[in-house]
Image (tube, rainbow, N blue to C red; front, top):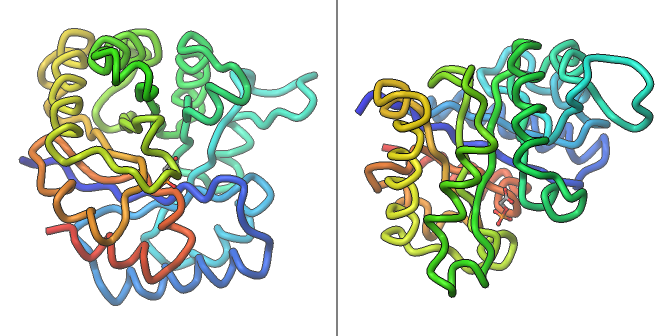
Length: 251
Ligand code: PGA
């Protein structure tokens, strides 16, 4: 399979200038030495994008943000536009993370509009989906993730500008991880839904990351699965050693 693994660190609302600069520098140096068979991305909060960008200079490690506006500019107090993110040196933006869907009531329709704006600005997008614990218990994981894919992914998405992240909500930040088999079941299903939406060729090449308590101890088993093409890593991406250990598991 020709899909290049992507390991992305989602720093969430963590970090100040000094520690983030040190973390980014350490990751840059270690990735250079390791030369992994994976693309590596870090997604700090807005205030740290410029600092982290500078710390990553000369490194292949890419930069991403964690959200963006649907608008390019104008009277939208508190929002940050995809054009501004591109200008700050971002390659990627994470959209529709479950914390945004919950904290800010973001719907899949809004996520899709954000994705379209981001793609138009030349950013790549990581579109997050995932079921809650109640939905999983009710046997609705596949149904929920299908709906989210259909409503959140724009028709202009291609395998080179869009990445999907399957993040079961009950596994995020809880230490509870989906078993590799459970995760693979959803990943394979998501690829099928993507094929219906975007065509088989695009779906076969599009990367689907797993997220939700991925850590050094479980990364190898998850990444070994056919349809798991990388990870979106929260907690474990804040420690260079853990993040690097996960990256080192990529075959
Ligand atoms: P976690 O977060 O690795 O801390 O569970 C993943 C995410 O929310 O992207």
